[in-house]
Each structure stands twice: as structure tokens, then as C-alpha cells.
Image (cartoon, rainbow, N blue to C red; front, side, top):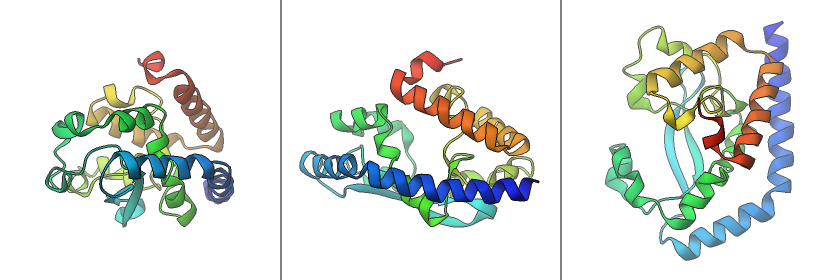
Amino acid sequence: MKENSLRIKRSIDVLVSFILLMILSPLLIITSLLILFTMPGPIFFMQNRIGYKGQPYSIFKFRSMKVDSEAESKFEFDKDIERLTAFGKLIRRLKIDELPQLLNVLKGDMSLVGPRPAIEQHTKLYTDYQKQRLNMKPGMTGLAQVNGNASLTWDERIEYDIKYIQKFSLFLDFRILLKTFLIVLMGEERFKK
């Protein structure tokens, strides 16, 4: 039963990501141009992440911060606030910065719903229990993202990811996608626990 659900999930991923890329192409082009003209540097932020069964891949995002190669290579998240641009703040609030990940979904590196993509440095510190979150493709959104996201600790996020994998169903995916849409429309603050 789970294998059938996973096949259907992949078909939905391909169909929905392709349709969304087509529909959202004007927004993607406008965002690219605005980044190009307001923030010197590349349009896309690309970083290695660890996916299904520990396989590495490059994640795509619109760049929302000033370039700082040293901070990015060392994962110095405490510098993120000072590097965030005004336009970057807007596209983060509307989750537009995440839209290029639709390419990752179409390629098969990611799914629309799943555990958030893991950073290799974090996965090296995982316990056997925490490694369970690598038993499913990472998602653009997931259970942690619709249950507090930034207000959660890393351990709480991992717990949500493992809970998602254990309770996976297409209906759960639908509920997470619907709640994600509402969060984008109304803001994350209204959904904080």
C-alpha cells in the first residue's frame, strides 16, 4: 500500500511542479530580474544538501541575502539577518525564494512534501533515530513548516520530520499543502503554536 502511495506521490510531484513552473513563470522571471538589478551577485543561491538515503544534491533558491561566501560555506546563520536585503525579506515572507525548488521536485531530488532538506554537517551528527528523516525525499514544505517552523528547535523539527515519515499518507500531504498555502496567504505568525 505504501509503495503505491509513493508512486502516486511522485506522479503528483511531477505533474504539479511542471504546472506550477509554467503558471508561475512570469513571477519567476520578474523575481530574477529584480534580484539581478537590486543585489549584485548570482540570481540563485545553490547549496549542497543531503536527500533520500543520504544522497547529496544541489538545492535551488532565489538569493535573498548579500553574497558572503565565507558565511555560506561555514553555515554562519547568525549573520543572515544583517545580510538579508529588503527585497529578500519580501520574497522570504511570501515564500517566493523557495519556488526554484520546483526544479528539484521535477528532477526527483525533492518532493512537494517531506522532511526539510538536510545540511551535510548536521547529518554527520545524527543519531540512528534521527537518520530516519533520510528515509524519504526532502520536501519544499513539511510537517515542521506548518507547525511553527522558525520558532522550533532543530530537535523539534527533526521530530516532526520523523513523525511525518511514520504517518505518511497522501491525505496528510494534502493537509500539509493546504496549510502551507494558508500560511503563505495569511502569514506564519497566525499559525504559531
